Structures are given as structure tokens and as C-alpha cells.
Image (tube, rainbow, N blue to C red; front, side, top):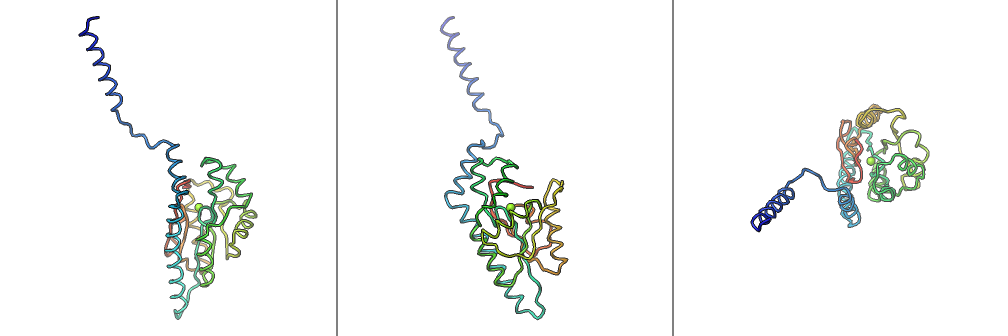
Length: 225
Ligand SMILES: [Mg+2]
């Protein structure tokens, strides 16, 4: 092969390589990178900062609303609705132990262990609500079969009393928890309560009505429709 042909071949090979390298894909960030980012979000204190800010805003609103209600000539029976997981109790140590895998069996065994710690700012909100004569209801996507360990965990974490807890029905087969959670708030309303706030980390805690306000808490670890 003469020198001209060699140069031509090399030039062609370089052009092809560049063409391949410059092709852009619509691929999202790779999974291991995302896991590193969400761990950093937690470990840097940013998660706790944003969580605390969101809960402080909710607490301020609840206390103000309760004070206004007490002064009213016709006070209402006020209530708040709290989700449990990643709202009142933290499963972070379990999530990290299973490398954030969406593993139902492991999630259920964590619920049975009943050792999830309280999300501290939420425990303060809960206490403030009770001090201000606002009833507390829990509405959770945990099934009724987890009632016993859930009661045990809530109590050991500091949530000693509540007016009601709504568990997801055992054979609930809708793809979204929105209808279940909405219906639970509707039932609370039918009991004569005015739900002033629904607080949670998932969309199902926020949409569907039967609450005056909603407050979203951060949760980048999992999505539950
Ligand atoms: Mg939750």
C-alpha cells in the first residue's frame, strides 16, 4: 500500500471514530451516579434542611389556623392528615441497606421490625397540632395486616395518640393510591372534621381534595404512584 493510501485509510478511520463519538443519546444519568447523588443529598444535610423548611411552613399554618378557629364564634373540629413512611417515620437506613432496591419483601420485613425512627421535625409538628386541639389522622399505603407493628412503631417513635388510622385495603388493586387516600380524607370530613392540612412525600398525599392545604415533603429514594 502506498503512503497516500495509508494516509487516506487513517483519515477515514479517524472520521468514523469522531462520527461515532459525537452521536448523542437521550440516555438519562446512569443509575450508580443517581444513587451517589441521592446519598449526597441526604448525607450533606440538604435533605434535612429542605424537609425541616417544608414542615416549618406547615406547622406555622396549622398553628395560625387553629388559633383563628379557637377565636371564632363557631369553631370547627379541625384535623390534619399525615402519611406515615418518609413523612412521620424514616426508612432511610433500610433503603440504603438494600441499595434503594424496590423490594416488597424487604420493605414488609422492615415494617414488621417496627424500628423506623421518627422524622424529628414531623414529631414536633404532630405535638404542636395536638397542643392546639387539632386531631391527627394517619392515612397510609401500608396494608391493614401491618396494623400491629405500625401502631407499635408509631408509639415507640413518639406518636402516642391519634384519632384514626386508615390503612390501604388488603386487596386494593388500583394502580394509584390516590383514590384510597382521597376516600380516607372524605370519610374524615364526613365524621365532621375540617381537614386543614394533608402532609406527605407522595402525590397521593396531595391531590384529590378534602383538605384545605397540602404540604409536600422531599423523597428522592422512591416513587409510589
Ligand atoms: Mg410516604
